[in-house]
Length: 395
Image (cartoon, rainbow, N blue to C red; front, side, top):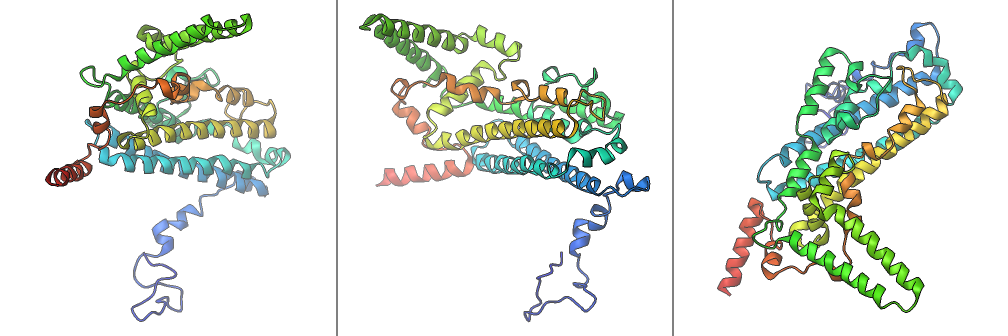
């Protein structure tokens, strides 16, 4: 690709008098700018009216779709890496970097909506009728993104009494249905967490140690209640004991947990929950530092998607009030219903803090487990670590 700032061997710009950069591919050709910059066709122009803000409306939504395409590209690559069993831990940095890129893009998407807010409701009404029955709900890339992240069909709020995929043509409907059947990022993260080192019963057996720590915490709270000097203090400790016991029982009792999963109140399997807690407790260990960052990036992504939905809701209310959407939905009321935990894919990661123990109750690592977490099992890291052990042994 030729570059406007490219230079020849003698340090001179190679651009000729006509603006050509030689026989190589030009900037415009590489980016296909002729197609890109001619794709803003205002419907108002076709009706003999020139409505200034329709051009902005088209540009902003086209940019959204380009960003969605890039996010899908990154999510697919992350899913492919996580699908390898066993997971090559040397790839964790790549997974984190690409997830971080998705988060950065979503930050732009959240802020980009404010550009549309420079348009008034009256400006939008000038060309709104030309849009019908087109609707942002018909963005199949966003629906595809939801599916690939892990949104399940029964989590969705019904749109104009229709299945979300039914508003699309047969070809796109098939693509969306297929994406529901593929392993989502949520499913792959769940399986990855279930394989967290330290969960094995023959070894460190984290869950048994965690259960004992919870029991120790409860005993201490109960003792505080018994030793309280005043009735008020005793009642406070008794309430703390009851609340703590009820809270931890929902995770210690696998049947209660599975019931919550069936009701859609939790997403991850019981064992995956164990893995997430294990990583959170020992995040300062070398082997868990990058996985812990990954879990935080997933929460960042979920938060930004919620912010994007919330901003979209506010924009629609500003432009339409309570009018129906152009696609036949209830508009603002429908969109408002999507800003809830039912659309939060990695909901369980946000709720982990409910079950974090005070530091003094965290089970101490055994020497063997600490050694196990001091190295990664990826091919490159394993080779380096073995070489370091050899050097230490020879010394």
